[in-house]
Structure formats: C-alpha cells, structure tokens
Amino acid sequence: MNELMIDGEDREEEEEPEVEKTEEMIRYEEETGKYAVWRGSVTEAFKKWAKGEKIYDRDKERISLYVSENTKTEWQEFIKKHSYSTISKLIRESVRYFIEKNSKLHGKAASQLDEDSLASMSHALKEPLTSIKGFSQLLLETHKDELSEEVYSTIKNIFDQSILLENKIINILDNIKVEQESVDILLIEDDIATIKLLRSYFKGKGYTCKGVVSGTKGIEELRVVTPKVILLDIILPDLSGYELCKMIKSEKRFENIPIFLLTAIPGSEVKKRLEDTHADGYILKPFDFSDFEVVLQTI
Image (cartoon, rainbow, N blue to C red):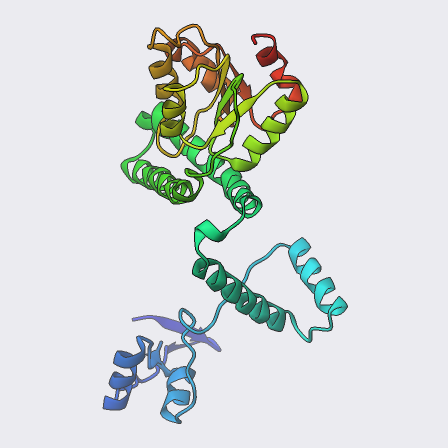
C-alpha cells in the first residue's frame, strides 16, 4: 500500500471515494460519447448537460484554425481596413461568400464558361497537381522497395486521386480547340494557359503552333498533320508522356520528328528515360523562352 511521510509519521494516503454513476450519467455518456465522471470527479460538461445547457461537440460544432503569423497579420490588417469587428466574422463571411460563388459556378454549364475562365481555372489547378502527381509517381517508380506497405498505399492513393481530378478537368478542356491552318509545332499539354502562352511566343517567332490538351487528342492530330517538332508534356491526364513518346517514335512516319519532353519532373529523372523513350531532349518547367531556342533550331 502506498504511504506518505507527513510530519515524521506514517500515514496511509487517503483515497477519494469513487463516484457511482447514476442512470442519468450513463444516458449522458451514451448520447454524447463524453465522460460523466473523470478521475473520480463529475465533469463540468455533465453538470451543464444536466442543467439543460448547450454542450458543444468540438468535432461537429467548433472549428480551430491554425495559421502562420503572416497570415494572421494579413487578416488583422484586412479587418481594420474594412471595419470588421473580429477575425471570426471575417472567416464566417468569407466561407459564406465562397459557398455562394461555388454554388453558382457548379450551377453554370461548363460550356457557357469562356476560354479565359477555363484557362484560369486550369492554370490554378495544374501547378499543384503537377507537383503532387509528378513526385508521387517518382516515389512509386523509383523508391517502391524503400516504402512500407502503408506509405506506398497512401502515395498510390494520392497519385490515383490526382489522376481522377485531372480527368474531371480534361472532360471540359478536351473539347477546346486551338484553331490553326498549318502546324510547325504540335504542343501536347493539358494546361490551356501554357498552350496560349507558347502559341503567342512561337507566333511572334513566325511559327505556327497547335495545342491539344490530352495524349488522345495528340494522337488524333497526328493522323491528319505532320508537325516539324512535337512538344510533349510528360504528365497528361490520360496517357503517360513517356509511353506516348515511344508510340510516336515507333511509327515510321514520325520517327524523324524531334520530340522534346516538357515537364516539372526533376531533370535527373527525365534524363534516365531519354534513351528508352527516344526523345530528342527535354525542357523543364517553369521555363524561360530562351529554353526553346533548341526547338526553333530544329525547325
């Protein structure tokens, strides 16, 4: 038995009597999933519940936000400038505004969205998707043996979900045509903003460039045109750029057409696949226009 020495005498440690649960306490615990008695004492939450007061469920009714000091400072400056009483009010109104705008966007047919809106949406989603998909693919392909089963499964799920999201985007973007009468450069790239940017650049250099937003569309274009150069994104929503490059190069009609891979995947990894894919080179994202001088030299 545990004993304490008090004033030089041996005294047994007094134990608090256990609180016997009442039927009301048992019902409270069943309804709320919370303790009525904790460490021998009746909880304050139960006392409030017994009085009929509101009990908040942290998982359902209360939300905690953890943000950086810079973000907090930015919010505080905003509420002062726009006369909000608290950050909480700003957050509530921001969420409400987002829900309303999001509902209107989903309620509007995709076909009614103009090309600039689609390009902006695509560009905003493409950058994080490219990074997530590219690095998860890299881990799955080159570090599979180093990953535990649980980690591998999680990364595989992230990779699969990024493909699903890209497929949803492509259902809208896939039908957007970039009309050109002749083609010097075929650009297979699922980001409309990138297509528009490079089309403008090559046009300024005196060359025509046609952009398509999926590997399947790229194959369809090659059935009717023979470009002088192909720029090929590695991470596409429907086909792997690596596999598509090999498919194109295997056709006698296209075997001599230079293909440059366009990607955000690390260059060290792309180099390993050049021989296998028969690609003529690669350009890394984010790119500078000077990077395309090698492309122009082949036309």
